Image (tube, rainbow, N blue to C red):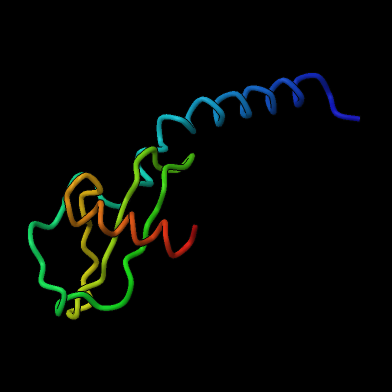
Length: 93
């Protein structure tokens, strides 16, 4: 059987972990408001990756890979971002 001090310590540890979780959720976002301006379709490699809001990041993020293997973020509110989201919705329902 566990002693009362051990149980109290584990409860305090659980409370500290639970309190620290919401504050760190924005640290899991990948874009941090750094969006590309313009990009020609020839510079895009593969399909865009769309991350919808979750417990890890409260924002919709669109990430494309360029032909130089750089990941770039697209503003979901821009015309290009809206087009990607529209196509993603039609593709994945």
